[in-house]
Length: 461
Image (cartoon, rainbow, N blue to C red; front, side, top):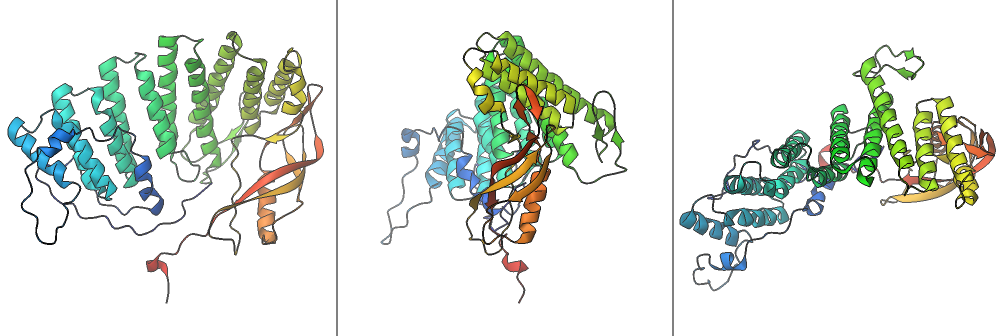
């Protein structure tokens, strides 16, 4: 999996205590060095609306003294701080106008890289909203997301998780646990985790996978209750729940910290026991994910708007799911069902050979990344033709790279061959049956990445 491109030293500015910006927040302060790439995320994380403070409020701030001969413009935060002081003095520390001013103040701090001060400003804005609109008012949601973004930038994932859980709590308390109003809330949370905290086999923890499972399970429950089983959002929620369980199961299989690994073969699912995952949790991920996927297919089949291609694709995806965990018979049956759905349709029969007639890697398999000595600093993609044999159960054999890049070493080539041999391919289907394909040519993408930057403290004389 892709690792970060290395760490660059970034200096966090000391907190400048402002009169109305408290340095104590709900979850306290921590000072942490930022990674280089996380620093670039700040601008992209500004999902909330821009500062809403009106021109009138800012223009009514106390006037500046007569400019000196060499005029030095005030800091961008100065108008906000002056306006906050004036409003607090006239109307109290929780005047409604202050929430907009704290939003604008936090944005100015973010522009300058003052993340802790921005976080404190947003916390103050949340307190103002809660005092005026109630402790569970959804109006605080945008500010809470901004705080979660900053916690992510400061590499405080547990604090970010607490903020997201707070967002979930206040909205369920306000709307009710099964209200359809929660669906946009859950959708935004789902998108936030996939953008700010995407799952990574090498970087994520088991708790991250469980958090996504809990969220998608709640989305499924609310959607089916509020919108009905035939609604597209309900279908999508079941598919997301299945995918979340699949990712958790895949994470468990990926773990290399084995304790007495052993193969357990039952009539239901073969798997290996892995450190930190007992037999029951492994079985639950497999069966719960499979059942959610089957329910997703049932909803598709019952929906008259579903096309044969969509139906066949869902069956083939579940076949991939089964094949990855070595359920060969189930996978083969699902592939053959998908083939038959297309072959029996009036409008899609001609697509069956293009869609299922050639082997293809499962779409969740990541592009292989390999460092190449002497490669340019920027990432590059190389497309190479690979000859292989794909068996009827998806195994890859006899791999040969036909046109490797000139600067690629033999060790790199061997590593890529091993990677491809470990990649499950969806087998080819001929006349509705899975077959072995010899001499199959696959155009493979190899992405080279620059080596990690050596930090000054790591260099030797």
